[in-house]
Amino acid sequence: MQVAPFAALQMFLAVARQRSFSGAARELRVTRSAASQAVRQLERHLDVTLLERTTRSVALTEAGRRLLDGTSPPMQQVLAALDTVAAKPGEATGRLRLSVPPAAVSFLEPVIAAFRARHHRVDLEIDVERRLVDVVADGYDAGVRLHEDIERDMIQVRLTDAFRWIVVGAPSYFARRGRPEHPDDLLRHDCINFRLATTGALYAWELARGRKTWRVPVPASIVSNDSALRVALATRGLGLAYAFEPSVRRLLADGQLEAALDAFAPTVPGFFLYYPRRARGSTLLRLFVDVARAVAPRGRVAAG
Image (cartoon, rainbow, N blue to C red; front, side, top):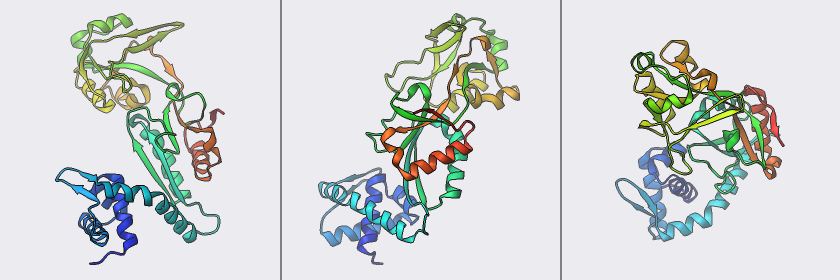
């Protein structure tokens, strides 16, 4: 089956972005074999090899890189123009890219659902990753982060109320090891910890009471960068975990976890949608912010 050159080029660009035929097939809603066939037809038409294929990876050749660099921006303009022509008068079209940490996904879900219900012709690309992303340098329209991780020159829109970070453990753990009564007691407990994405250092648990603060270099019996896994292991009695309270509220309510050092739990401002000031003129971003303000638990501008 012959594929039109425009469609084949679109398929190549999707494979180049995803570095995967399967990922490109999912993006464009075709089969993997159709994606592979389209790219092969384009390569035969141009008489060049665009992609180096192995059983595990896909990489661009020099010719593929030149084609990607030369056609990707114009292709996006063409696709945007097609969306605009197909849209009804006043209907928003285009694509928004967001960077979101795993811990904030549940807070963003109702915003995404409400936005798609109102603006179904706007495509959303949401990258979920733990590292602190430079939204400007990496080409995102906006991001979601904890307030303290956001540069001060960014505009911030609140997604959640302030919440506490708490130390939690299973009843079986406390029955076996006892309950810490002071932050320094954590030094004698099994703790399930994580490494900072920026430095690779183990996180020192932060606790506070009044004006006094502690940063405790807890002993890490288990280390994982996945917060859900850390909490799950804590429910099995393998150690204490440091978690933000909303993520473990159900487990606390049904008794699978119990809080320790409650009087020392620090409060943080919460999760915020953020974006550079120069982006506030973007129509699509403004529409997304409007929905976030209406749907999120606390949808007000925190700075800007």
